[in-house]
Length: 167
Length: 142
Image (cartoon, rainbow over all chains, first blue to last red; front, side, top):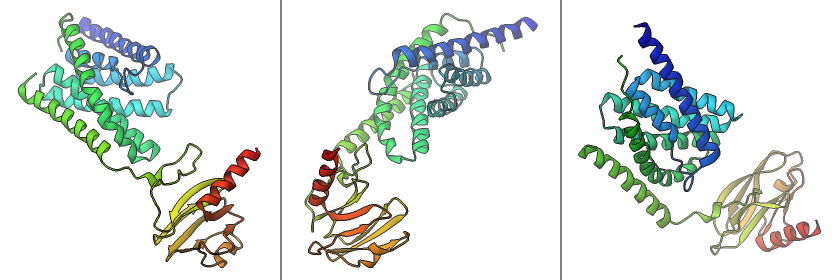
């Protein structure tokens, strides 16, 4: 029992660290692939965490990722932070719902990616009080779908190599 | 992925593609395009009367068509100003500055000698061509 708990903590710390590093690498070195669409590398970690550790741990990993990666970049509580948080909150909600519905990993990944874009656009609309910003959503959604497939495929490859921990 | 899930993804793609096409097809509201400095771009379509410019701090903050009866609210240096347009003429309907000269000037049209000027708000209401000349003279002078 004790060893299991320690193992869970270690996994949680490892996944959080990976999510933070991937999120920082993406924002600093990779940036948007085309027209503001990012890959969403940290979503891979969220998907892997929910399958291996569970929903509660995924929420912790996602929160850590947003708070610590913006803190490290000196952007905490800036507009970037809130926009990022909006995307993560909505994508986490979608992930929880789809996990309960036992959807396939690929579909979960695509919808998470879509929810991430929608969440960010909602926050931007509120932040800048400009509903017209929502016009960007179709572009983002069209970009999100292939990116969702990409992260889903990567998560599948990762999950094939890590055994899930017993609850 | 199950068949239902494929359909859901397809629906998302189709809806976004449709929205994109609609955005390209639907006409844009050109009257509301602004430059980075906050000045308004002159509308490209033909005015029913003529284009009248509201100038504040050497930038046009509003173009209105003197042939279209309407009410516009603009923000000046000290207060908001409500401009009413009717039958090819316009006047300041309401302003909260301290001397009301602009409001007391009454109805003005293109044939009037004096344009509406509000000194506290730094607002001048003149025809678009004169506004262009006035602004370019000021900016060239710099």
